[in-house]
Image (cartoon, rainbow, N blue to C red):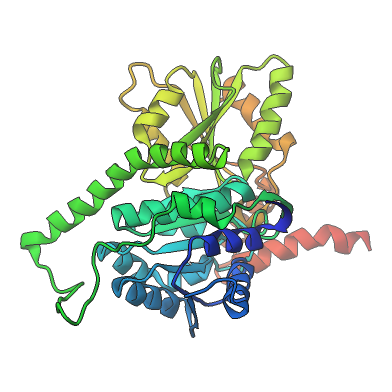
Length: 419
């Protein structure tokens, strides 16, 4: 059924169709509307046989999901930003125990300074925690990925994180095709847990493991991720056959057939990048896009194949590993190393803290990649004048004050002068 609906509510309706039995969450912007709607569906009786548990923190939310999943229930939660950091210990526990919890991550910047807008810093902070990480480009895909995530998580007995850009997707109202219950039931089998805590057959989970077995435990977690590389495309194809639309998988290509310059990106920014590519194609520039859906597991072989014919690759990402560069660019670089003639790689960090990524800026970035390529990480639309003044301030005065507040004062000066 086609609905004009807010992204969060569309996701909530899709999650409800997956028949979760325990939902636990603590509200944090921008995921709050998702769990609010799920709470309404439980209260109204539209989501039957489900217990909605209000908890006192994000750590408690995932801890309850761990307990519910270990007891054999289909469990779901959601969080964002600082909330994900607060539950970090439980994030690792969920994957270490092999529990198929599905969690929505409403991607948001991590403070300090406080910032409620979108980037991918939170997802990157947990990229090595052993969860599947799938990134949605649109609200339609955000809904669809949740349905696929439950199936993947339960088949592999490992947790899955569906990453959706905060506000850009969660609060945007657009047309979404909401499937019916029969369609989802046909695609997603009833939950049959691999492991269940049963008083009739007592067992311990998460017990102490020493050096004699810990490597093997971690290897098996890595092995499950490699299995996901096979299942993700297979389940996406089954989803296409059942629901009539492309969604999920490892990655998607856009106008890459003859592209000398290929952009790699994740999430909602790919829509803006496609518009930019269409404009540049009209001007005769051979440019294309690879949209990554799966970040963990990282699709090395599929990406290598998609980029093999390119001369230049520009990675556009919404996060930064301070002191190193972009996390996505690092992984793309590793994937390209074994090519006989690897393309030149250009890393661009963009959209931090919700800064708009415009077509004008992307035009300039993509042309620069071929005309005047740069070394290291490029920060798109960086205000070099403001940065320079702050560097000068810190060198000149030992007690120079907090950086964020200093930058805001400098940015406010033109407005004060105008008055």
